[in-house]
Image (cartoon, rainbow over all chains, first blue to last red; front, side, top):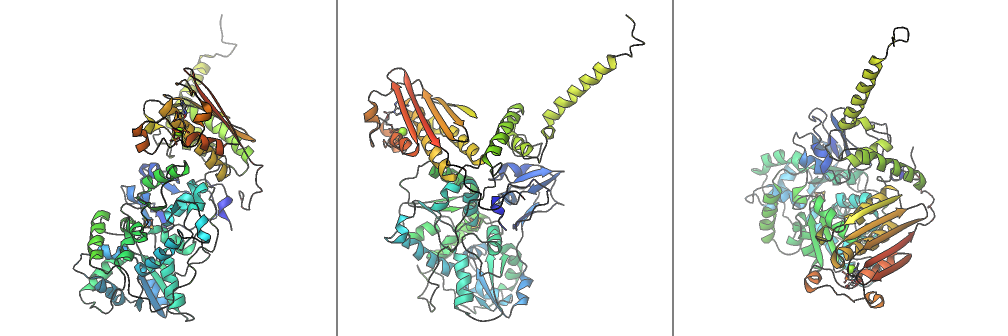
Length: 445
Length: 148
Ligand SMILES: Nc1ncnc2c1ncn2[C@@H]1O[C@H](COP(=O)(O)OP(=O)(O)OP(=O)(O)O)[C@@H](O)[C@H]1O
Ligand code: SF4
Ligand SMILES: [Mg+2]
């Protein structure tokens, strides 16, 4: 079950499906091709009037969700009703949840609201984020981590980790080999606070489509301790409805440092490493990774890279405008103590990755280099003959991408309207010439 | 396979296109990421040098199953003392270029480090040609998968 070595299957071909949170709603898609150009891994094609996502390439960044003018792309997460199947349920709210609501609702009230929705317990992801920060600091100290290549790239954003796997495999060694805060929170809730208990379910309340995918097929560790991932947007209205009567049944423990992870610069500020840079938005992240791959950024020690605008507060499963949410988060965080109070439990000793992260060679034309070279030559010739307008009418994001699809056998040259017109013209010419011909018996000289 | 790119000399913020393009091609050929990285670092440095020191030039990449051959040729001012230019930390870049993060005098040594073979030819008043060869390791045994 290793999909990584496989050449991407063409849209519509029966391939073993990789799970992805980002999906298309075929009823809403009009086949307009707006999304195909924005996809950072060129993972979308329009076929038969509908967008198709090439699973091997999709990194769940949510960019297509943000660009689709028809709301036809969505991030699928688990329903709240799922918690009914467990004896004891624990909600793990991501700190971006706090930014979705007006400040007149305290964090305590929001957490209490989760209890009112049916959860038995709450554990804040922000608390786990502080532990990850402490471990990240360790990566800069003397010891075995000292020979990790610098700058390190934060591995907290699953879309960035997958972007590196697909487009920047040479930078995999730069990924900080640490579990993301959500996974640390899940392990604490399940394996530390409720060790050995049956029927415990832990559920992330998530701004993030990538984390829905990561809960099922994680990168860097074998199995997630999460039992489900519920999108903030699905929980927003029910939660809003109970806030008035929820009371203040629990007190938030999270400190400012952990809460601020939800916005860009929060993680880097918490780390306190002055030579770190923070970047958000997938296009800007690509710019930084390009520079890093070119050997620039020598003076940078740490890269906090987040796929969403303004960071996780701009995640595709949120409801509030990312910039308003960021401001709210900042205001809320200012009122908090710097760190959470001392822990009453022993956190997991190992927060490191347990599995090597492999490149996802979804961009290679063929695993056999000789074959790939032959295909490349063919592709170059095809591309040179295409008009170079990158108009998208063929369903591919660029003329180059159509040429690639043709050599991969999943498209034909006449998918290009200009090529089609050329061949129609040629055909018409041939018809005319044929029409001029007369049977030899009637041909007078 | 041979690819040829013009590197502009009037806008060095645009430099880096040729090496990015070669990087894409090498990725599609399924070449080992570590080799791609060495190639793109070496080629990027040469491309920036062309843009900053030589007013642009021509970048060529020739790819065969055994090797990648990068040739960067310009008709700029040339380098009077090649040995000096190859010294780590030597740079004639003006102050403002340094403030933009270039001009540490590490480009040429970096190219040499990343290429398996490196040649620098230059004539004052005529131009400079950098030739870099990167050998492709014998194809690694595929680690499972393969097209179903
Ligand atoms: N193509 C070229 N034409 C003319 N002079 C060059 C060329 N390439 C390099 N040089 C000269 O050699 C010097 C050293 O080049 P090198 O690439 O090592 O450093 P740099 O370009 O000055 O700084 P860095 O590469 O670290 O940004 C340059 O400062 C310049 O004087
Ligand atoms: S920025 Fe945050 S919400 Fe967006 S993909 Fe990355 S981890 Fe998920
Ligand atoms: Mg240089």
